[in-house]
Amino acid sequence: MNIWLLISLQIIFKEDFRTKVHGGYFDQYGIIRDIIQNHLLQVLCLVAMERPVSLNPEHIRDERVKVLESVVPISDDEVVLGQYEGCRDDPIVPDESNTPTFASVILRIHNERWEGVPFILKAGKALNSRKTEIRVQFKDVPHEIFQKFSGTVRSIEEMGFVSAYKPLETTYMKLMVYDRLRFDDSLYCQIHSLRLEV
Image: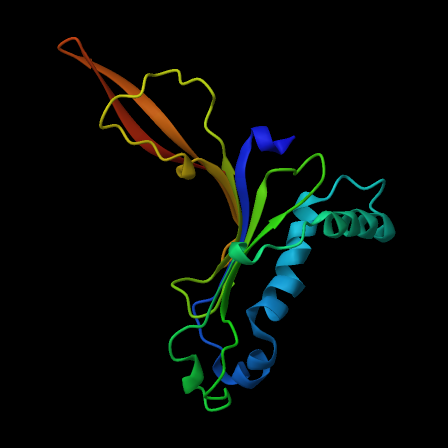
């Protein structure tokens, strides 16, 4: 079970441009129906599905359907919606539009492998960068090798595995590395971020 290993799994889609000339189309559907429902759920199914019997398209489809059938109904307090400032400046978008251009949704899969691991789907337009990626955040080890000292901050959010698809395809792992330094019989701990590209 992944609950012992993972904090969460995020599937992120970010675009740094606005709806542009597609504002009228986009206003009818919004980010949920345009991106999350069509694209991010496909990625979710591929990531979360069990190994199919074969690479036969029907077998792959069957495993993906099992994932979708295992998704627990979404709780309102695990959904965030927003619209970027200036969205209604597009002449095709109605002045009273409240169609979301950003959404973050937490999905939970009720099966043996994924029980307790939240899948966080995020999608938005007019954000600070353009990328599509999967982020896996690992849990901290149960017993530290080094003691935690006062004043030392360790962010477990920095430990994870990232597979990015846009703008450049890359896969890397982020780890926190401890250095033990001994000066004047005092033990100091330095933390370095390490990025390993695959």
